Image (cartoon, rainbow, N blue to C red; front, side):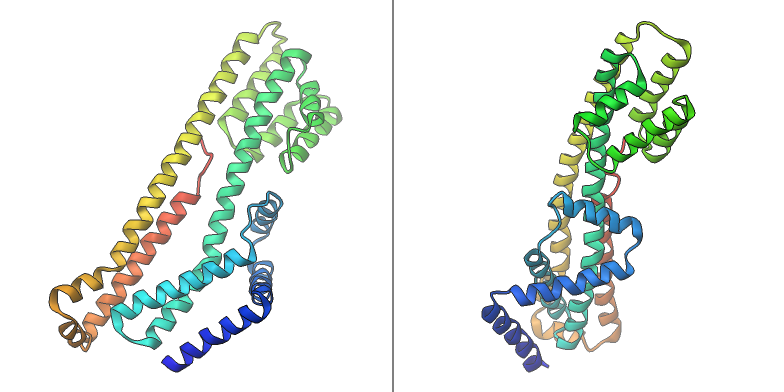
Length: 297
């Protein structure tokens, strides 16, 4: 088994050196891409395409490095627990299968951050346009033509404009946008413009200025939350990796020979498997927390 493992590593190195990594990287990324296209939900495919468009998708080299690190780390840690190459290979393969899920979480986070930034631009610029035009639809047209928005928000603003002209009112277009982007700043702004349109308020400049101030405060809070999350994420990962190394502490305390004798007991082995799986589960939960609900109010 050890010979087989060394042979696999040797083959990878030879392929890498002979082809400067290009063929290996292309093969891995093509296979991962095929899996995404086949099994990923439609919403995630759209999200991933946007992340690619933003230039923030991992390159083939980065994905390959991630595979090597995950597989190598899982193999090394599990071998320290069980001193069994076959079990370590199983853990290494399982660790590689986690990578698509982590990529999914990462893409959701990047897309969520992008959408929030677009919503900030949409609300801020619409309010500023309204201060000049005194018309909600004209404000939308000004924001749409300004080039400050990107899809999908840009297309949705165009849909709002078309709906407003088709229906002769802004009610349906506002409902459409509120349902698609469930942010308080969007709903509050739309409610204000709806009220101004229906009641014919002549001077809402103070209210609009206050709303701009609220948006700035919200954005500041969201960015502060992102920094706090990043700090928590780094500490959480460090702590999780240290927990994996508990087996080394046990071996240091009781000696390697005594530890190997303990491995003869199936209950001890089951307990060690439990430690690895539970710690992995909590690490994944931490990753989920870090990557989800970013940009939410």
